[in-house]
Image (cartoon, rainbow, N blue to C red; front, side):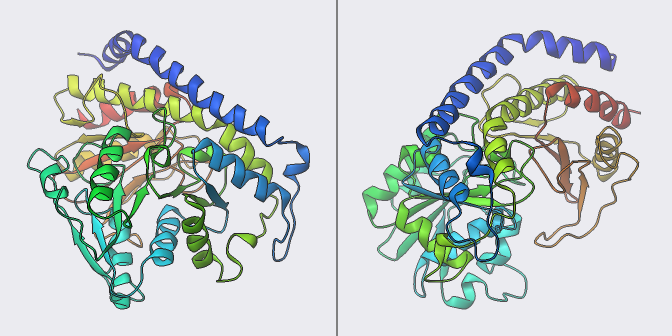
Length: 408
């Protein structure tokens, strides 16, 4: 079947799904507009301060707007977070103390958290170095949460449960809001004092609610992923219960400063505008993931999520089966990116990752995964993880070239 014909078939098959995504976008955008209106966002909030960042009206208002959208008591939205991993690490270090236990309930965590926890690497200041114990519940053979094991897994020592919403570099379903709600309920039944913390990367605005709306105590993510709307240049966030947000902020800055410090460096307007654009950008990325899943399924490649099923994040995985195909796929995506299209992705080591990675990321913001990009570790079964996209039509154009590259 010719590539163009297959893409046209995909577009026709996905019309009703695309309409449903537009409805989702409208619901999430309405939440954003209500929060902007409630907190009287105006041009005065786009101004910035320098130095210590004291009394930054824009930053303080953005925190309140973000918290309302996420249905959280408080939020700290900061350019000083280097990445989603940094925001997550600040939350973990802010809450956990020597002798506490960290329990991951969705199998192994994302690669970049392994050194934070102390599972590999030199353990230079890892949680393990601070005598914080770690345990994880493995997934079932079908790749799902082991609900039976979880129902008895929490002890009086379990200070924090780590819930990774997205599949990361694993071949499993990403968690739905309903899954997260059920996890929180089971954990709290066993120990009401255990903090339920969600790594929310890639999941924002893909459903009607966020984890903090269904009982999660705290969550964190990156601003160059979903909530940045493809235009925020750096940063991350934590949102949830006020005391826990402040504990994480104290790790980002210092005790006694917490969320009160941190100059926004003339980024306020971009952060407000990116948040406004975020529901639409997420919708476009989700549409693109449906196209990728449909087409590669038709070509006989295993895909996750499956075609035509509701999305829980913006990641679409395709099992390509060989390093040559993975590299060729990423090269084609890079060649059809708006930035650095002339560069050739080459597998290499990257800080925080165990395996070599091949990455296609011709994005306006370096490393942005709210813009269309693809990457994958050089290990079996050689999966391409696609994410982001400012408009699904760009994804379709790049996809046409990627298909031609791997079926030659």
